[in-house]
Length: 420
Image 1 (cartoon, rainbow, N blue to C red):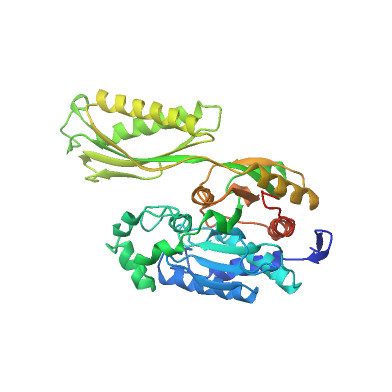
Image 2: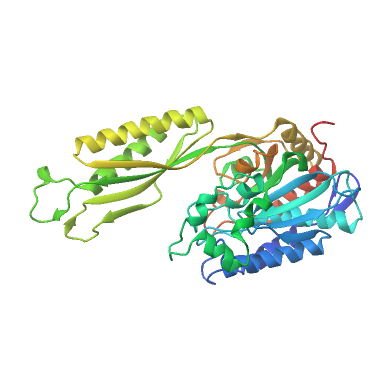
């Protein structure tokens, strides 16, 4: 595919992007299942590869104190504020290869195109490959972007992974100094805006037969850990009427969560993604069950109202079944609207590349949820096949990768800071 961008030149970046996506995907904990977890040897190998690509693209590049991969392409004068582009390079376990890396690799490809043409802009371009967005290892998300935004919570350094290794120890083993994380923080005056290209992770663009879309907002999320405690007993000797079965209680709670969200016509979604029953024997009535709850909605008011309703229903089920309930909020992120002035520039770029304009919200969380504390944010979505994400079948067609690159490059070259 060879298409004009900004009316000045021809580009064909899709093949370069797809090739690098495949190179990065080869760096994995195991060859069978893609896993690139925060502060592991695979994570470091990926960081080193991305750093090399940044330098090839004409950028100064380094690893910051949390493990973010940072590249800077200077403007037509030194030390100008920057337009920051970014996404993450960690993965979930048994992941797809596009979630996160597409945004990092596409941004690098765009800067490389500028560099090949000797083009410098009246602002710098910075690219950040955030080290940990998924939160797989230490159950705390957006670690890389929170460090850049200056909102990193140092208490998470004492958190431990499933092998008992603390984040502090993992950072040291990675070659970083956990006491220097504060140095990763940037200030609002350094950034003109934060822009992220990402796969949609849903089926909407595919249903519209569109390669790209403009994100309106990143939905907030509330996550809770629930624990129901009843009484374990022999499966053959305790009559049904006398049982305090924690697992059947959990099943009713999970059904209630699904019913609440299905009945809502305004985009409420709820997920129970993990459940554990104890003691876990075939012939023993479960005495304790733990499960997670994830609630998301387009607005904070909507989400908080739904969470309150779900909590009331779960509490009522526990009382009726004579089960003890513990319910803890483990994560809460506010909804982040994308800045109107940035959305309009993305819309112009989409029109300039002869695509139809379509706006849609993001139900998944992204690093912009942290970056909004120091910059206005916006996102470009790229169609993914079947809307599948966080799964090995996650896929972006080469033509769509190229379309995303063309739109992003046009935004970069025609970017107008808010105060101009």
